Length: 512
Ligand SMILES: CC(=O)SCCNC(=O)CCNC(=O)[C@H](O)C(C)(C)COP(=O)(O)OP(=O)(O)OC[C@H]1O[C@@H](n2cnc3c(N)ncnc32)[C@H](O)[C@@H]1OP(=O)(O)O
Ligand SMILES: CC(C)C(=O)C(=O)O
Ligand SMILES: [Mg+2]
Image (tube, rainbow, N blue to C red; front, side, top):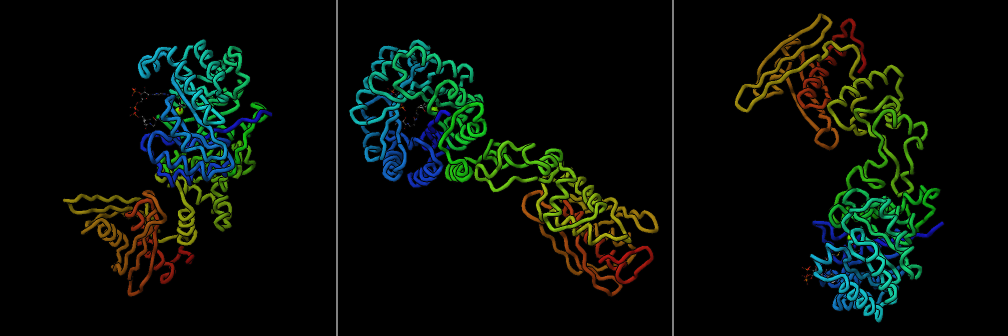
């Protein structure tokens, strides 16, 4: 089994994400977590770039003692000196030197000839080798570099003292097969390549950073550079968690391993997300909120029967507590029944089916159901049903800031359908005036309260009312996606309760 070093650059290339700026305290906090995560090398910053970064790198090098802390430097003396000042107290100091080697970068950015680039690279490695015990050298934009030139400069910097050679896909341009070929080419065409560890550094501009990193490992890379959550310049860097987990679960295929403590992944991801402000997308591999969430009925049924049907890794492997079966539009009876059991409801099959069909109907409007939603649904159905005197079939409300609110309602009663309409000062008053007409009874509203059932914009509305009918006071509650429907339901619930409790009329069963 090949051992691959994880070179974490969350604090350098990761911090190059647009809009991200970490202060030295935040960098140190992340560095400590990266140490727990088990990275082999940590690039803490670019010391020459700012005073803040210089101090952050110095502080991290002073405090992180179990692994190598490194810093980036251009091929100029000032950058190398700044890196040395920041890193010299480190436990295992190393420098990361870089210089671009593609025609585009040499001609337009550096304004140097290939020969000048070779000379500058060699001179910088020589200079750095007087200070640093370990020198990593990167050929910036290596993947758009002519291969013979890349081989030539790599041979020259190894001869000058570089022992880690990084081949960055700086602009996220390469494909896995091509990237692998570059590593093979260098192994065959650089005489002293055996003196250096080859390293991969991939960007995700075309969504291939992880695949490319894995291809490099298959073609002899002994180090991969990556960031937590895949943050980084433009579309980001290869994501540490994706690489580490891929190698772990596909040992059979890659035959390579890392020292990453996988159970620290979620914690690291949360910390980096929080301190950088870069929210992890829900569908992000391994660490996204949905990475272990199953929404569709067939998947949920499979997972309930045997987790491995739809889970290639356990959530616990990466430090996530457990998977979740999200109840929504695509859920089926198995998952719905399991949720009811978890919430303590032991229902008969018929009750379950009835609730399930109500849930399915509601799920066309409502995206997700929380535990509170399901509980409210069960209470609403199980404890307020029976054969009601009045059942709400439809409700229409017209409201405009300049018109008179009006409602029309259709109810089912034991005497047949009742349809009425009325107006009111507000929408709720219009509904209650209409319902009063439907029942044909004088009803006073004594109290009306509304509350959201849980958080979120699409949370159920719960309405509680207290009414007076024939000198009796009675309460009712209603739950619905819409506040006005919940208001109508609460009112009818109270009316129905009156008939069950006080009239005990034929056909009405006392279920309260
Ligand atoms: C692929 C990568 O991720 S490379 C790392 C990128 N990271 C960063 O740039 C973050 C930190 N950078 C900074 O804070 C600033 O760019 C600094 C402090 C490093 C430099 O700032 P400035 O001196 O104002 O230069 P500026 O950034 O505008 O231009 C870069 C200069 O460095 C040169 N340069 C670029 N790469 C290298 C290199 N590897 N070695 C030597 N010189 C280089 C450019 O040609 C340009 O030189 P010029 O001024 O003679 O034209
Ligand atoms: C500095 C180098 C390694 C880099 O970040 C890149 O080329 O993407
Ligand atoms: Mg980069």
